[in-house]
Image (cartoon, rainbow, N blue to C red; front, side, top):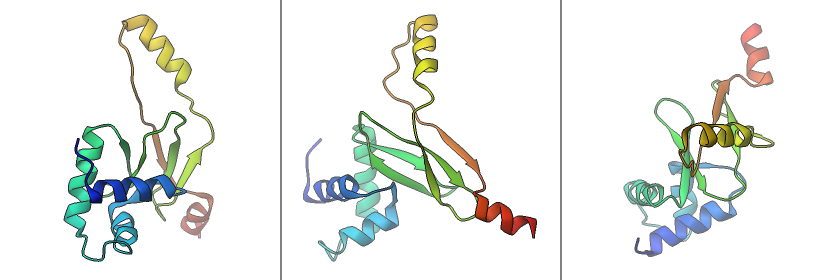
Amino acid sequence: MKNTKQRLLIIDILNHAKKPLSANEIQKRASEKQPNIALTTIYRNLDTLLASEVIIRHRIDDKEYCYELKREKHSHYMVCRGCKKKIAIPDCPLKDLENSIEKKTGFHITSHNLELEGYCNECEENNDK
């Protein structure tokens, strides 16, 4: 993968982000340094970074995703279907399951992704009213 100016900018943005970002959020931050960067350029580079396993993608809803750098210490998220807030799960609950599957099948797992969908307390309370 060739490291273009746009890819390096996207990686830098995701490296400094405190949470996964949508393509629109990435484009907004990128345009502060490269004012003419198009959303299509962001998506094209995100696809390349995904294929190269530099970043991972989390589904927000049926039409939108958010992105973060792939790191050794990773996070999983609960996504609120009401407000779209992403809440990190403190520890990875899949390591023991992963080890068990590898032992049973001989399949070497290199990564995984877990997302739980539901409603945060605030949205749940608003739905009850």
